[in-house]
Length: 222
Ligand SMILES: [Zn+2]
Image (cartoon, rainbow, N blue to C red):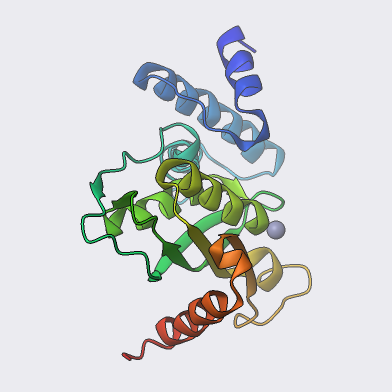
Protein backbone atom coordinates (compact mmCIF):
# COMPACT_ATOMS: atom_id res chain seq x y z
CA UNK A 1 0.00 0.00 0.00
CA UNK A 2 1.38 3.42 -0.84
CA UNK A 3 2.40 5.62 2.06
CA UNK A 4 -0.06 8.35 1.27
CA UNK A 5 -3.01 6.01 1.52
CA UNK A 6 -1.57 4.48 4.71
CA UNK A 7 -1.08 7.86 6.40
CA UNK A 8 -4.49 9.09 5.27
CA UNK A 9 -6.05 5.97 6.69
CA UNK A 10 -4.33 6.60 10.02
CA UNK A 11 -5.48 10.24 10.08
CA UNK A 12 -9.05 9.18 9.37
CA UNK A 13 -9.16 6.68 12.21
CA UNK A 14 -12.04 7.15 14.61
CA UNK A 15 -14.42 8.49 11.96
CA UNK A 16 -12.84 11.95 11.95
CA UNK A 17 -12.81 13.98 8.77
CA UNK A 18 -9.58 14.16 6.80
CA UNK A 19 -8.99 16.76 4.08
CA UNK A 20 -7.79 15.42 0.74
CA UNK A 21 -6.99 17.12 -2.54
CA UNK A 22 -8.90 16.51 -5.78
CA UNK A 23 -5.91 14.48 -7.05
CA UNK A 24 -5.85 12.35 -3.90
CA UNK A 25 -9.61 11.81 -4.24
CA UNK A 26 -9.23 10.62 -7.85
CA UNK A 27 -6.46 8.23 -6.73
CA UNK A 28 -8.67 6.98 -3.94
CA UNK A 29 -11.48 6.18 -6.41
CA UNK A 30 -9.04 4.33 -8.71
CA UNK A 31 -7.66 2.28 -5.81
CA UNK A 32 -11.14 1.52 -4.43
CA UNK A 33 -12.43 0.48 -7.89
CA UNK A 34 -9.50 -1.95 -8.16
CA UNK A 35 -10.37 -3.44 -4.77
CA UNK A 36 -14.07 -3.72 -5.67
CA UNK A 37 -13.03 -5.63 -8.81
CA UNK A 38 -11.02 -8.03 -6.62
CA UNK A 39 -14.00 -8.45 -4.30
CA UNK A 40 -16.24 -9.25 -7.28
CA UNK A 41 -13.70 -11.89 -8.42
CA UNK A 42 -13.82 -13.47 -4.95
CA UNK A 43 -17.64 -13.47 -5.07
CA UNK A 44 -17.71 -14.88 -8.67
CA UNK A 45 -19.43 -11.80 -10.03
CA UNK A 46 -18.41 -11.07 -13.61
CA UNK A 47 -17.26 -7.43 -13.83
CA UNK A 48 -15.62 -7.83 -17.24
CA UNK A 49 -18.37 -9.00 -19.61
CA UNK A 50 -21.70 -8.95 -17.76
CA UNK A 51 -23.63 -5.90 -19.00
CA UNK A 52 -25.14 -5.27 -15.56
CA UNK A 53 -22.00 -5.42 -13.43
CA UNK A 54 -19.32 -4.38 -15.95
CA UNK A 55 -18.97 -0.86 -14.56
CA UNK A 56 -20.14 -1.57 -11.03
CA UNK A 57 -16.72 -1.65 -9.27
CA UNK A 58 -15.93 1.92 -10.43
CA UNK A 59 -19.52 3.10 -9.91
CA UNK A 60 -19.48 1.75 -6.35
CA UNK A 61 -16.03 3.24 -5.65
CA UNK A 62 -17.21 6.69 -6.79
CA UNK A 63 -20.39 6.37 -4.72
CA UNK A 64 -18.43 5.56 -1.55
CA UNK A 65 -15.85 8.32 -1.96
CA UNK A 66 -18.03 11.11 -3.38
CA UNK A 67 -21.37 10.43 -1.70
CA UNK A 68 -21.63 7.93 1.16
CA UNK A 69 -18.34 9.09 2.72
CA UNK A 70 -18.32 12.69 1.49
CA UNK A 71 -18.49 13.96 5.05
CA UNK A 72 -15.10 12.40 5.80
CA UNK A 73 -13.26 14.10 2.97
CA UNK A 74 -14.69 17.62 3.14
CA UNK A 75 -14.81 20.31 5.84
CA UNK A 76 -18.09 20.96 7.69
CA UNK A 77 -20.30 23.52 5.91
CA UNK A 78 -19.35 27.15 6.47
CA UNK A 79 -21.70 28.73 8.95
CA UNK A 80 -23.05 32.15 8.09
CA UNK A 81 -24.27 33.67 11.29
CA UNK A 82 -26.16 36.80 12.19
CA UNK A 83 -26.18 38.92 15.32
CA UNK A 84 -29.16 38.05 17.46
CA UNK A 85 -30.39 41.64 17.17
CA UNK A 86 -33.85 40.94 18.59
CA UNK A 87 -32.15 39.16 21.52
CA UNK A 88 -34.47 36.19 20.92
CA UNK A 89 -33.80 33.64 23.65
CA UNK A 90 -36.80 31.32 23.30
CA UNK A 91 -36.92 27.82 21.83
CA UNK A 92 -36.46 27.42 18.05
CA UNK A 93 -37.25 23.98 16.63
CA UNK A 94 -36.35 23.02 13.05
CA UNK A 95 -37.15 19.85 11.14
CA UNK A 96 -37.81 17.24 10.15
CA UNK A 97 -34.45 17.20 8.35
CA UNK A 98 -33.87 14.09 6.23
CA UNK A 99 -31.12 11.80 7.48
CA UNK A 100 -29.38 9.56 4.94
CA UNK A 101 -26.46 7.66 6.38
CA UNK A 102 -24.69 4.31 6.27
CA UNK A 103 -24.38 1.88 9.16
CA UNK A 104 -20.75 1.42 10.20
CA UNK A 105 -21.32 -2.17 11.27
CA UNK A 106 -23.02 -3.54 8.12
CA UNK A 107 -22.65 -0.84 5.44
CA UNK A 108 -26.44 -0.74 5.05
CA UNK A 109 -28.50 2.46 4.74
CA UNK A 110 -29.85 4.34 7.73
CA UNK A 111 -32.70 6.71 6.85
CA UNK A 112 -35.00 8.89 8.86
CA UNK A 113 -35.29 12.39 10.24
CA UNK A 114 -33.57 14.77 12.61
CA UNK A 115 -35.22 17.52 14.61
CA UNK A 116 -33.08 20.19 16.24
CA UNK A 117 -34.05 22.49 19.10
CA UNK A 118 -32.01 25.59 19.85
CA UNK A 119 -32.23 28.15 22.63
CA UNK A 120 -29.91 30.91 21.39
CA UNK A 121 -27.94 33.10 23.73
CA UNK A 122 -29.49 36.59 23.74
CA UNK A 123 -26.07 38.14 23.22
CA UNK A 124 -24.87 35.43 20.83
CA UNK A 125 -25.08 34.53 17.16
CA UNK A 126 -27.78 32.70 15.26
CA UNK A 127 -27.25 30.76 12.03
CA UNK A 128 -29.29 30.43 8.85
CA UNK A 129 -31.89 27.64 9.15
CA UNK A 130 -30.63 25.78 6.06
CA UNK A 131 -27.25 25.34 7.78
CA UNK A 132 -28.79 22.85 10.20
CA UNK A 133 -29.80 20.69 7.23
CA UNK A 134 -26.31 20.95 5.75
CA UNK A 135 -24.65 20.03 9.05
CA UNK A 136 -26.90 16.97 9.41
CA UNK A 137 -26.05 15.96 5.82
CA UNK A 138 -22.33 16.46 6.44
CA UNK A 139 -22.08 14.22 9.51
CA UNK A 140 -24.48 11.66 8.00
CA UNK A 141 -22.17 11.19 5.00
CA UNK A 142 -19.88 8.84 6.91
CA UNK A 143 -20.14 5.30 8.17
CA UNK A 144 -22.08 5.90 11.36
CA UNK A 145 -23.80 4.48 14.33
CA UNK A 146 -26.78 6.61 15.30
CA UNK A 147 -25.63 7.29 18.88
CA UNK A 148 -22.41 8.86 17.60
CA UNK A 149 -24.07 10.71 14.71
CA UNK A 150 -26.43 12.55 17.05
CA UNK A 151 -23.52 13.53 19.32
CA UNK A 152 -21.28 14.68 16.46
CA UNK A 153 -24.03 17.01 15.22
CA UNK A 154 -24.66 18.27 18.76
CA UNK A 155 -21.02 18.89 19.62
CA UNK A 156 -20.36 20.64 16.32
CA UNK A 157 -23.32 22.99 16.84
CA UNK A 158 -22.26 23.65 20.44
CA UNK A 159 -18.73 24.59 19.47
CA UNK A 160 -19.72 26.75 16.48
CA UNK A 161 -22.83 28.54 17.81
CA UNK A 162 -22.60 28.39 21.65
CA UNK A 163 -26.35 28.38 22.32
CA UNK A 164 -27.86 28.41 25.85
CA UNK A 165 -29.58 25.14 25.06
CA UNK A 166 -29.53 22.53 22.31
CA UNK A 167 -31.32 19.26 21.56
CA UNK A 168 -30.88 16.88 18.62
CA UNK A 169 -33.33 14.05 18.09
CA UNK A 170 -32.85 11.46 15.34
CA UNK A 171 -35.47 8.87 14.46
CA UNK A 172 -34.30 6.42 11.81
CA UNK A 173 -34.79 3.04 10.15
CA UNK A 174 -31.69 0.84 10.04
CA UNK A 175 -31.71 -1.43 6.99
CA UNK A 176 -29.20 -3.76 8.67
CA UNK A 177 -32.19 -4.63 10.85
CA UNK A 178 -34.95 -4.60 8.20
CA UNK A 179 -33.18 -6.29 5.24
CA UNK A 180 -31.13 -8.94 7.02
CA UNK A 181 -30.67 -10.49 10.42
CA UNK A 182 -33.89 -10.19 12.38
CA UNK A 183 -35.84 -8.82 9.33
CA UNK A 184 -37.54 -6.19 11.47
CA UNK A 185 -40.53 -4.18 10.30
CA UNK A 186 -39.79 -1.17 8.08
CA UNK A 187 -41.71 0.82 10.67
CA UNK A 188 -39.21 -0.14 13.40
CA UNK A 189 -37.19 2.95 14.19
CA UNK A 190 -34.44 3.87 16.56
CA UNK A 191 -34.80 7.18 18.36
CA UNK A 192 -31.86 8.87 20.05
CA UNK A 193 -31.74 12.34 21.56
CA UNK A 194 -28.98 14.45 23.07
CA UNK A 195 -29.62 17.49 25.26
CA UNK A 196 -27.25 20.27 26.27
CA UNK A 197 -27.47 23.37 28.48
CA UNK A 198 -30.93 24.60 29.46
CA UNK A 199 -32.59 22.01 27.24
CA UNK A 200 -30.98 19.41 29.49
CA UNK A 201 -31.64 21.10 32.85
CA UNK A 202 -35.08 22.68 32.27
CA UNK A 203 -37.85 20.05 32.26
CA UNK A 204 -40.46 22.47 30.85
CA UNK A 205 -38.23 23.39 27.87
CA UNK A 206 -37.47 19.73 27.24
CA UNK A 207 -41.20 18.93 27.26
CA UNK A 208 -41.86 21.82 24.84
CA UNK A 209 -39.17 20.46 22.50
CA UNK A 210 -40.64 16.94 22.58
CA UNK A 211 -44.12 18.33 21.93
CA UNK A 212 -42.81 20.25 18.89
CA UNK A 213 -41.08 17.05 17.66
CA UNK A 214 -44.40 15.27 17.74
CA UNK A 215 -46.13 18.09 15.86
CA UNK A 216 -43.40 18.34 13.21
CA UNK A 217 -43.23 14.57 12.67
CA UNK A 218 -46.96 14.38 12.16
CA UNK A 219 -46.67 17.14 9.57
CA UNK A 220 -49.50 19.06 11.16
CA UNK A 221 -49.48 22.82 11.50
CA UNK A 222 -50.06 24.29 14.90
ZN1 LIG B 1 -25.92 -2.10 11.24
